[in-house]
Image (tube, rainbow, N blue to C red; front, top):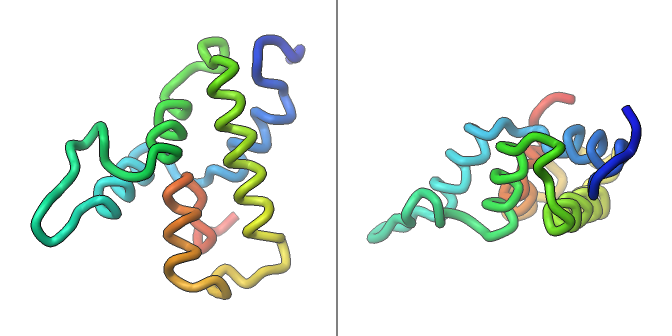
Length: 112
């Protein structure tokens, strides 16, 4: 496929390799992560902004992606790569590290 639009083949492939949670898994995680003892976020506002943006990107066709979507995709790829090198044990970062990555759609404990 020729590289057209704001998202290159390389970025498309890398994003979909690193974002290893399904839309449903990510939506459920964002809702769970945002829920508190006394309050719960409205579903479309639950979780961190980047996670909601990733969820939106996962729901789009490639041809519908914008420059801003491409920027978020690159940011997520850069963050996941910087926090998760291939040799790192998926349990090495602890719960807060894992939860931060999961809020962007990457579960380090999920098999490749």
